[in-house]
Image (cartoon, rainbow, N blue to C red; front, side, top):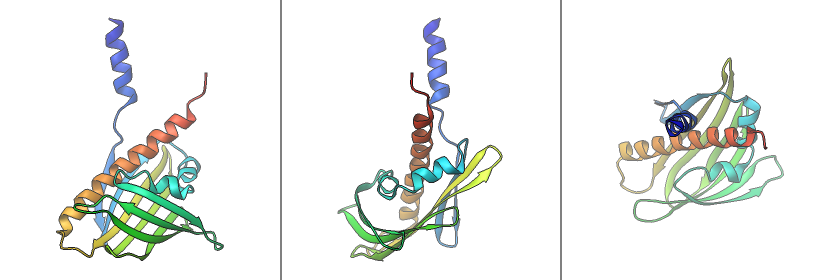
Amino acid sequence: MNVVWLSLLWAAEVQALDTQRTREDGYVVVSALMPHTVESVGAIFRQSGRTMRLGESVRSAKVTPLDNGCSEIEVVNKGFAKDLAYIAERCPIENGWHSKMKSSDDFEQHEIIWQALPHASGSTVSIRVKVSLKYPVPNFLVQRIVGGALEETLEKIDTIIKTEQKPSK
């Protein structure tokens, strides 16, 4: 009987985050209501390299701090047939961070906005991505892959905060 209770407790602990996926002005937007403060989410967002590496498809992210409070990030992603790379500038914005591509041989556009807004139950966390490749890949396929990756990223943020907030014994 104890095994049943333990498995029920474990299942409750690993419950998936309820995410919403939409499209807005060319962005793929994934958001979720999290039981965490805006400050705790912001603490993750402030770590440029860590935030960029949360994505399953990110092979590497090299961060160079800039004098203006922003960071230059060199990112390499797993692609369909080859790795895809870009250089972006990542800067703080109201309620979050904004990463905008500066150069790439693989992308026409790559832009990410991370935001956390206060909510009575914690915070509403969203990630918006606008991306287009220089290769003939159907846009619907790119959007689907990006949306799935963003959902996984929000789940990782939720898990990281839950893990870091657990009291040590």
